[in-house]
Length: 286
Image (cartoon, rainbow, N blue to C red):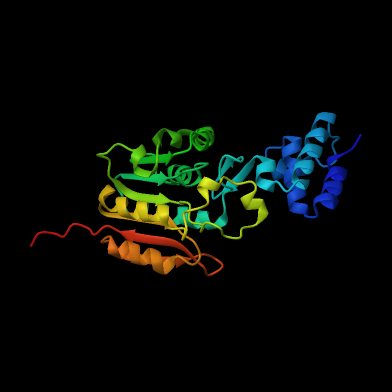
């Protein structure tokens, strides 16, 4: 019988990275987390578990991204299921979600938000999971029925906070009731320029419709900026993930649409990544 300690060593030698090997072994062993897996190291693996592990390693050898092979990934404080129907959640998007959550917290009594183009649901579900249960409403939209199936499956993972989530299918604001206004609008839209030289693990595996945003990468951002202003309450916030070289262009779009408090923030690699803007608050009467 082969123990998990032996399998972990063998898998590390095959994939070349101990952390990736451990994640593969954890999933194959059905351990609930790292702590449980570490208690199983000297236990024998079943034939079915070994077959599952071998299958995942074989998929990794084809170039399939680790996250899809695992079928799950961590994002901020939640775990989500992912597959080729949706983008792989990235650390940059965690920063975007954090900004949206911070802006939502400024609305102390109640808050209504929308995650446009939700994909796997990571931003919208993080909003619902981290904000107060009472007074919170989160809409999540996508034009892809397949992506929404993934988001719905992940909804159960946030427990009772999931009761605050609404889902709409359609392109950007077309998925929402026309009279609905939001305190925070957040989106990680397609923003990669057509023809960009991306890594094969991205181009060959992740959904193109969620990546490419036209010749300059700004087609969908233009639409969201144009339509968001009138869908925000006065004082409401728009938070966008953008491409590394798009800060100046997105700033101009936001200012041209009449937004206030426009800010471009950088990611941990000091690249433009987050555009933030506010609809001007109502002025008190003199």
